Image (cartoon, rainbow, N blue to C red; front, top):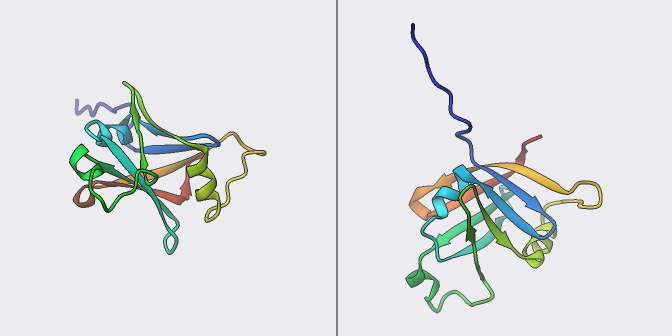
Length: 125
């Protein structure tokens, strides 16, 4: 008998709510040692970017305190709070929270840049 045990999930999923961004356990694991994050948007490819920064990187003068976002790490998820960051994202990518309470997207970790790429064209239903 050739058995392959199946894990609960191996895919990173990012959920975007009106007030925060939530990373599932798979995506959260990449940020366990992050001190702060940067959140950005790649307009050409419609990708939300979340970059992990350690304490030394976060203290560099090239980042203003307004650019740095705190990430809360819990046993089963990670969360970046801030309605402002969601409103900024909505300037580039349509999200209508009057119709839906959350949007879920596939993501992928880019190890060389310590960055999570959230593919806004790959919505999970």
